[in-house]
Length: 184
Figure 1 (cartoon, rainbow, N blue to C red):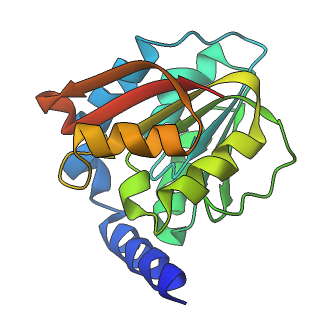
Figure 2 (figure 1 turned 120 degrees about the horizontal axis):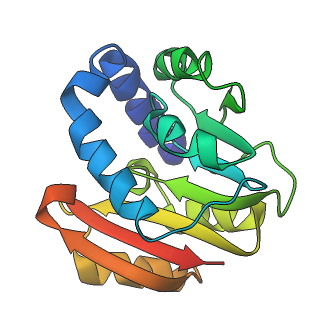
């Protein structure tokens, strides 16, 4: 029950911010996305998952370079904002789903992004486990962690505990956190 209470709190928070989220956070989020994409390669045949997609800011960055982009989030009002972005991008879809219990088969996605998600999850290791489950073998997994929640040491330990092989780890004041590009 404690786990669901934390998720419900995050859901309410992001639903409350839904209409102003981009105005408040798009610059910070786009900086994280650009840093991630500078350390990854997308191909036209790939399926991309954005876990905790929020308003879908990642979509505009990757939709032209991927076969399919799927965003999931538990907050319904923020997904309404994400759906507005999908109108312009025919190879994108949004689904209301819990990041710990995604509705996908094993090894579905070539690349998975979890930007500004882990600090909202009651058990980030469990969340990463679910991300790994839906990721194909040798897929790229990009995760971030806010500095106010994770020190670099704690973030690195979390990734190691979850069994991710980190190829790039950046900590940058502009990103307000840590960015890890990992392999499954």
